[in-house]
Image 1 (cartoon, rainbow, N blue to C red):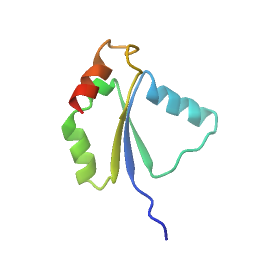
Image 2: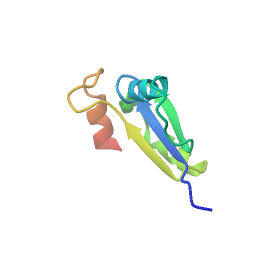
Image 3: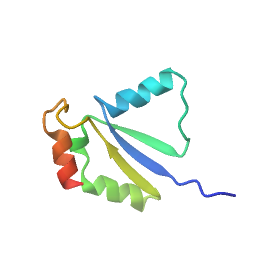
Length: 84
């Protein structure tokens, strides 16, 4: 049996979660081992959330947000980039 990593994805409401939602509506598939967590902005993802996900068994964590200069909250993605 091959290894299937468990991935937790923190997705910003305005860009990455909307893209994941559109993929679902379009019946595109993504692996069942990816768990999407909807957050208002990537800037709201604290390091403790990432550590907690790993502590609870996730093999990997990703934080996705808006492209630089496109954040709905202006600086949330820069804040995340610098902090995480």
